Length: 279
Image (cartoon, rainbow, N blue to C red; front, side, top):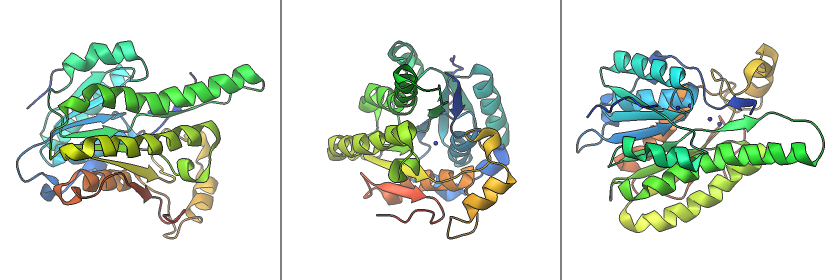
């Protein structure tokens, strides 16, 4: 499992990851809230699908949530709907996270203290035909949209992560573990980066973990490819007889962001219904 402006805080052809879910999917119990008060949470790719479900869970818990992405209208709509649904203002910040100039520009609009950073933005570069130039475009596109979108922002705000409470959670993909060409390779790169990040931030009490989803329906990632026949086929590869939902991934992220997960870091939490067993 990946968008440009901001609204004030309260308290190329690509298939974009983690899209399209309703606010009703993003409801959480009150015990999601940290014991010492509302957290400041930044969710990239938070306008749709998995990212929106994640943002909704934190907003429902009473946290201050900022969603970041490239698409202005999508973000504004999601922020308004989540705010209405949960009674907690969700703020949109529009930024192309693969562009270092854009990242530098929006740093002043992001919270000065961040308790939870969720790197969810990402996308899959569409096939561009044969030949080395097409190969380069595909591989470079996947690297920029999946690796740089996480690394540029995280490295830019790492000093804002709250000591002894900070959480960095990066959403990757089953493709990183099973293979998936340039897309899988870009997601696998995040696994290696996360291990180094966890080692660097661990002494400050900041944890860094991965959630690697399998097939998740209710997003824009697959487009028309995820028809009923394909859904049935993919569900048959799991041990629970169904594909995932954005809420499933959101629940895994919320756990890793919780105080109870403070001794878990550098890990890859698979969220795939048993499609690929952990190792």
